Length: 212
Image 1: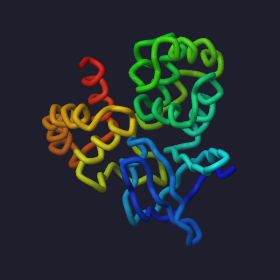
Image 2: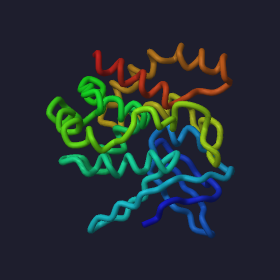
Image 3: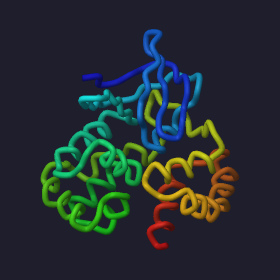
């Protein structure tokens, strides 16, 4: 198993990054929140999980080891594969996932594209006693962990956010509509911090699409 990769970030796209390790560029699939913390040309460390299939080898990357462990644990539930587990972490930080499962918050779990009421109930039933404390995790809720760059979009935030929503199952028209509504929020972020936080906008976009 490849537990982590460390190296220069060679490229970033809406659904992943390329990290150069020992002269080899490794393609790593990441959530928007993790991608937003990577900067091309800078050094980064990503906790990783290698998913092996008959016709593919896919490396998934995470902000820290705890997020990777949660990704792997989510897949032990019936009906949850790597893409759905990654979608859960794209919508909710680890602490919120633990809270939702431990408290039986089906509504929060159903915000994830691909999880309906029965799927949410199954997650609660199968994982409630296995996810650990809801207070021990702070990943993606505060400052970037050591080894990851600051929040620096490498492409226009509209393109990143639209691509992220489409990859989670929304149509291009739906994604563009939500992105348009969030333009004032993005402007406020830039005025306050000098950067657009894609992970925050993604969660707000999914709330808008859920209400629609």
